[in-house]
Amino acid sequence: MNFYIASGFTNKKLVQKLSKEIQIQLGWNDTYDWTVNNEKADAVEKLTEIGIKEMKGV
Image 1 (tube, rainbow, N blue to C red):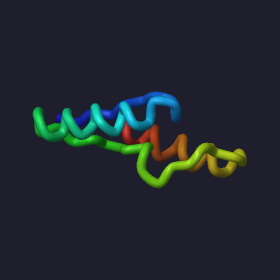
Image 2: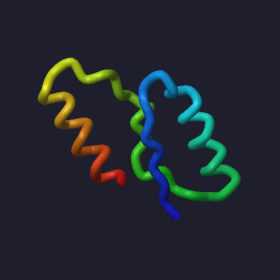
Image 3: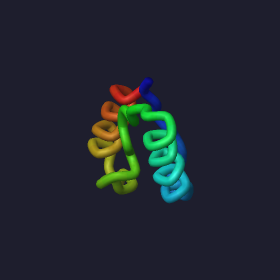
Image 4: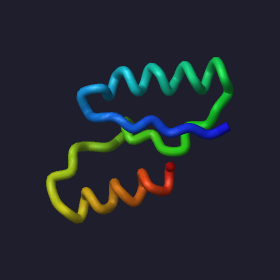
């Protein structure tokens, strides 16, 4: 089974922990981990790039 966790940057550590537990305990696949190598967007182009990656993950 696949999963994706949407949340804000303030919950980044919690999302990482929850994602890891789901993968270990249930064997599910995280379709897009936005917490890895992803900074807050500071330009429209970057926000668009992130949005496309997230949409593909969902």
